[in-house]
Length: 222
Image 1: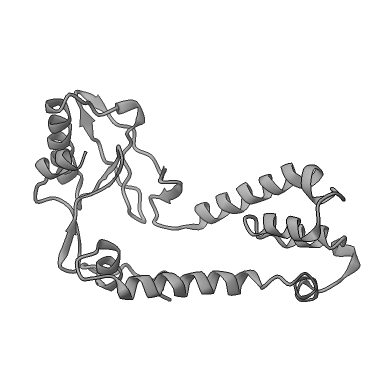
Image 2: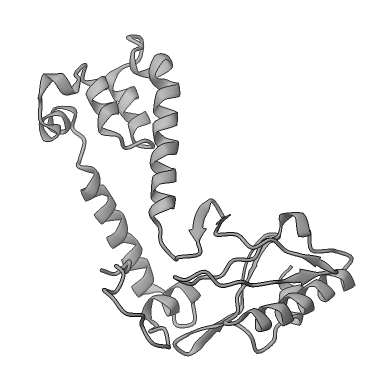
């Protein structure tokens, strides 16, 4: 797949500072990037041709088009005479991306997934007296739900016990502190990355173009 991507490279792509990003590849999952629908069609045509030359083909049933724009913009892409459906959101490597560039739906999706896991494990884990409190807390590390901690401590909202008290008794740090520690850890990785590594370059780059009217959206570094 890397060879196909290199051979199909053109002048299309999205600029971040001095870098131009035209594709994202993980195994056989590929995302093509361009600043216009016409450029994206050209890139898609070359990529599909290189795939056919290598004995592969682009699966139109698994391919979609999406425009990152606050306003809805039509983008018609074709592969082998078939028009790809344009969507408002798609999932790549387990993360949900939306056409508006917001992460609200992804956050809600993760919260919902964690809540579903907690509900399914309530009878088999939380209320089991055979499991120690330490074992239950080890499961909490992958769920991060205050309601889970209250159940481990044998409480409910009606007990009117502060969340900080419950966490302190169980020896669990606040969730926001855990998140901030993870962000600082990733920030350290970004600063230590050698020049040329894409995550570090994108973090340091300043996107070109004019900002739309209104308050700027919160960035990761904020």
